[in-house]
Image 1 (cartoon, rainbow over the protein chains, first blue to last red):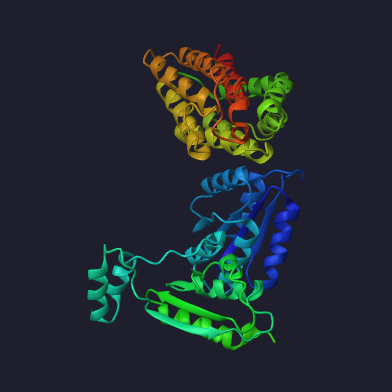
Image 2: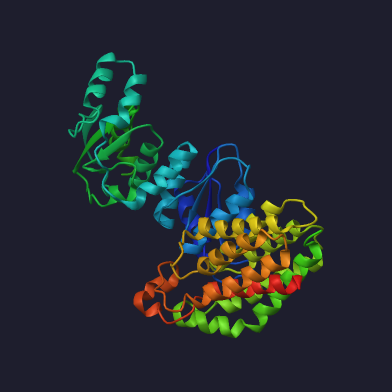
Amino acid sequence: MTVRIVVVSHSDKIADGAVELAAQMAPDVMMVPAGGTSDGRIGTSMEKVMAALETAAGADGVVVLTDLGSAVMTAESAMEFAEGSGTVLLADAPIIEGLVAAAVAAQGGASVHAVRRAAEATHGYPAPRPKAENYAAAATAGKEPGTQTAAGQAAGEPEPLAPDASGDFELVNLAGMHARPAAKLAGGLSALDADVTVNGVDGASMTGLMTLGAGKGSVLHVEAYGPDAERAVEYVAGLVRDGFGEP
Amino acid sequence: MGLDVTWAVKWLTLSAQAMAEHRVELIELDRAIGDSDHGENMDRGFQAVLDKLAETPPETPGAALKLTAMALMSKVGGAAGPLYGTAFLRAATTLGDAAYIDAASLAAALAAARDGIVARGKAETGDKTMVDAWTPAVDAAAAAAADGDTLAVLIAAAEAAEAGAMATDPLVARKGRASYLGERSAGHRDPGAASSALILRAAAGAAA
């Protein structure tokens, strides 16, 4: 099973269409559209959203994507009414990009928090360099005492840490970094416990990766921080080597 | 004694009547600074409340308000749906299964309703929203509750809400669609504050 997703829009066409689009990249993820009012007008319906939340309720949790203003309020109200039925998280993300990123992350087996993170990362801001204190706890739990001390000393200092893992990979597929590879990359990375930058942008942000405009032959410079840093770099390496499964 | 489910049903019925009567007025207010659907939405929402009340007659005031919350959230469509829905839901939760509401729990329920609106809409006093009707109403209700007379609490709340709604006229909107107009939103009454005052007046009317 995977995390499930509810899409709340003022328009049933937008909700249905967004789900249809995302399903292409995440065929195994249950996505439930809740668009328009109960009588088919433009607006949001508490009834529809609650029914969608009920349909989607599952052991792995639910992430909710919304469009404009009152959709957020309706979703929050529905969550208040339906409280006690497992983890339900509201993602603050653009509805299409956020949904695609969330769906791909869910398809990859990400946790409910990671799926929301994947959706929210589509705001497309470049990733800030992780601060030492963010990983002080991770380092304490880590295996190398050396790292632990280094992280502890660096805490509070303005200087950025050296990445825990890094690598450079040349794109070999013809189309380079377009939507599907970006979704795969961001989806997988957001499922890991690591902050990753790819040529300076947030590796968990599908839109961020797409703004790189990286074509065939471009080199991706990957820097990863956190407990899963090495796995993150290997993940990028694997995908790039296989041309994202494309010619 | 105190207010019972008969009062609650009468309140909601009078609210529905008020929304129908003031539908055009609310539409006009909303046309000036919003998207002119508030009167339409509130009228439709409260008609749905009446349908639900007829379908499944509630046994307690709290049950009546919970049913109202659900109907408004489902049928209103715009932002007023979740805002009023949350208000009625929080009030219903505060009242629980009680058969009768005394002055203190009435004031507490009004405060819970206002807090729900604030939590959902993130608006503050002076933002030119329904909060500007609710907060004076809640304060007046709390002050009046000391005497223990539920009718006095409701009249105080209604009067304060009406004054609060009128006081939104000169304000510049900082929340909702009216805020897109900036300075041009001044000189118009906030439709949500206006409908809130109507609903609180209906509550007093039902107890009289």
